[in-house]
Image (tube, rainbow, N blue to C red; front, side, top):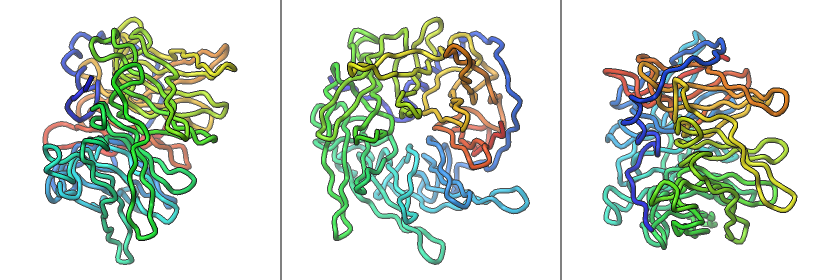
Length: 415
């Protein structure tokens, strides 16, 4: 079964047409301060960011926009804090489709300060409409400019197409990622890029999704455990009788040999469509989100997976988005130093158009849900990607929209 769907924010975008029936209900609120650090114009500075941010050691922010730039196919940007509290944006690279287009993933650094990421389109323009996507590297130059190089261009078959997720390094310096579609069975891949002595990279497919019980369309980034196993999510597949005919998605593990184990198959009541990366806590539990499903309202869940002694995993829904003023938490979570969870919800009951939420662990293993910020009209709408903390405990993120004449923002929240 091949699940070919349009690119962009998975699941959440489909929910926009349904949002009119979401019931606005009161929720616990936490005092916080919201600041807009940069408004994208949609022109040369980029527009419509679809991913989260990363910080360097000096406090600069880096991210991508899926549109805008010199050629209109997206950018990589830097935001630098100024002494007066303002921030200055610099476009490090504008994609021209031949070298990539529509970057939708978080970036990562290597140990010497190079940036790595993926673009959903671009590269081999003859292999797919507008290209099948690329893996790219940005190298800083002494004069402050950055040079892009394409490490791999996808061709659909056999290596996949539409790499929507970010990358991850192993201890040997190899890169791993996922493609949403393509591969031997047309349902996406897990791939590995190995660096060569001459500076080139060799790609190998670690796993091809079949679209059945093993999953389909892995939108999210991967994570490693200490044993070198990879963990991730697939939006579709699993129980194909759930969310007919696609399946409600799975959480999976890949061992170093490429053998897949499904850790959890979603049933609908516990969520539909996990599209984000997972995160571990200090004791080896996994946490993630689904963009739909969940008991009560069907607007997504936050879930936890706990490993058992026999190798199985037990899933528990920590929060179901039912009658909340916001919905569709399609993006990866982040812990603060106290063990609280934070995330973004993409949409909501008008005039609420998304929110930053918090889950606090209380007595008896119960998690309390609260809202740090609800996006209502300008200056920001529809938060996308995961959040990131700085060393002072401030949160940073992006929104995809922000009203007329504006094409998304970078924001800061002081909890």
